[in-house]
Length: 84
Ligand SMILES: [Zn+2]
Image (spheres, rainbow, N blue to C red):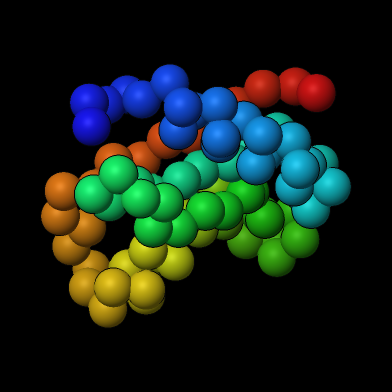
């Protein structure tokens, strides 16, 4: 699959809209590995009172835990930012 991929971006936009209630920000992220969504996350900094909890960072943390490796080889990150 060639990146950036339109279908993945559309799926991320839908995911972000569906989870808007969590943070109140239209920010979401996917980590993609081998054309599959390895992890997904939204911004949680205002819930956790932690400025590092950007959607991208949350997605990277989840992906690393999932594969038990800090190196996310052959992965791509997609992120949104917008206002609903
Ligand atoms: Zn961010």
